[in-house]
Image (cartoon, rainbow over the protein chains, first blue to last red):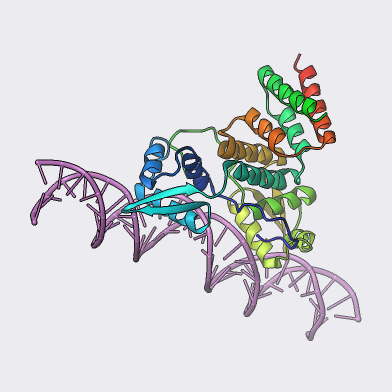
Length: 134
Length: 134
DNA sequence: TTGACAGTTCGACATTTGTAGTGTAACGTC
DNA sequence: GACGTTACACTACAAATGTCGAACTGTCAA
């Protein structure tokens, strides 16, 4: 898309498929494509080669790194889960909430029907943060 | 991507470009492609035809509707801003937080450096929700 | 009526994405 | 050392995306 303004380098965006794969890699790294495919086949029935191709591409995109041992490709993540989450949050906020955080929470509170329990949890989270910031 | 399980119909996902355009449409609808292009040219320098083509495609995808008056195409949104936000939130949570809300907020509180003011705002939002749920 | 304009339609093209088949090379086993 | 099993590398291909240019058309004022 390419905005005109400069922006502090943030992790490139991942597609849905890539997220699914990354989530497995973070759990199992370093791991082979077969491992990932097997972990996912119950939910998504992708062929081995589909997963492998995607992972190869993710190496090019620098989401993954590859280490070859003998006949085996071992993949590892090149971005941390937290960085990826941060990037995703930024993009999400940017798209839908003009980048602002509190409107987003406001929206959630207003629009999603939160259970009393969830509200309690949220309150606790905030409370803790609040205390810590003093 | 297509998961194996069924899922309640939720709005299809929009690309970044589509979000940018939608945000303008929501502000100005019903509006012409030229209006949108002009509104965006300062930030993104897309040619008129780029915007127009994208909007045409968005009609096909049912994000927009088109009404032709004489020589003019007037576009309107077919999904509400809130629905789009809801969908986006779901996708965001699904990708990065296994669909769960509180871990997401936890993450924000832990990882983003929130200003004291932001924390206060958050607390107020929650407090209000809390009171309301009783 | 003739431009100047604004807006349209259509086609085009390079990339990226989703998805996978195939032939091949290495591995472990009997 | 032959053989079945794996995992790999390579190729393919349609659909979606990002991006426009060119040619055409309707409108309105001079």
